[in-house]
Length: 488
Image (tube, rainbow, N blue to C red; front, side, top):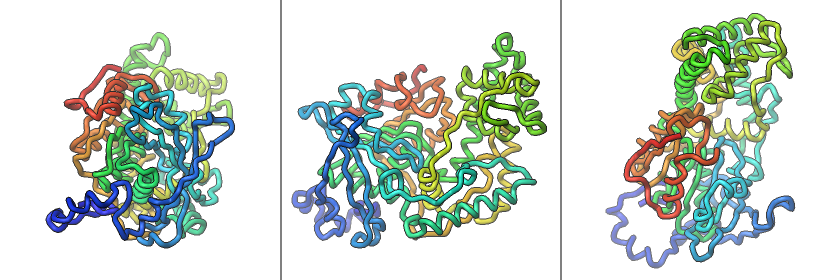
């Protein structure tokens, strides 16, 4: 039997009374006497979210405990939204939505996802968005980080490692000084608990779910903690739950190297158009010569200049072979004295987003090494194995100096809950091998791989060959008979 907080007790212990109580205890609520019961009974005030949005887009706030070990103590608000199902007759339930992150606000997801879902799905589900605890409008936190402190990955070099250690320590110290009373409670497990309070407050027996990127891990954790309340779960661009979290960052380096090799072959086959080399080896040499040149003399761009490490930091773009190749050509020309090249496409995260990301990444697990020398050794080793991005995924992060908080270990995902995982073959962030790791953890799931699919997202990116499987599963609950690969 699974308790309200995800722990289990022997079925033999409670088996005799479970059947008798089932008819007496509403599944939508919590057990009689449970201190969480009052959260299930709160009245939600739905109001129009925004005058610039459709009137059907409604928002409300739900109260949850800051600390689920002390449900009668301090509370925080979770901002949530909805677009009601299109058909009261066909309505199946609610579909909670999460955009990823961690730290990504999801309040606007119902209106963003609505046009991406077919009518038969929209008819069956209320689309429910929410800002995870600490993010967006859900009692947001911040660390007062300066712009140059919000960078996420640092390239390794012996000469700058001491500065990287100082940066990691500074970010951790600032976060704990500013939000130390809240940080221990900004975890994936607590966000999953918040989702279950949302479920109960909405009066639902179970929830269905769509999660992208980090949202796939959040969804998997919910299925592990609350399997009996998990209905139809779609996981788009999945992370391997066994790699939380440092292992996942380092695993991305291996995927980047595969995508880079694929790009060199693609560009070599089009040497007449791009002039980067007639063989994959020549294209590879052209790229690394460019990086070496930029290390000596930064390459001018429209808004500054790029050194070699900055060029490498754009490694995720190599899955988009047609888009990245002109950028490399422009950098090569600029390095030779031609016009300035475009900058690396990037979005600087807000302090809130990056603060929540560190809270979750560092707080979910205690497996982060505490010794800076471990990061140095791993960065050197990973860069030798994966020259493009190995050091970026292995170098030191604020998690090395994060204060231990609470006594909950990271969730071990290992269950039979049904779920549908959809995955692009060439996702640069949540790699195919990560999705396969999620599939191993969810024994009742099916994995649909889009052959040749590029980019970080399947459903969120628009039409693909996986759409039929997603629609069938959400509307009928039927998964494919087996894992499958479909054409791009």
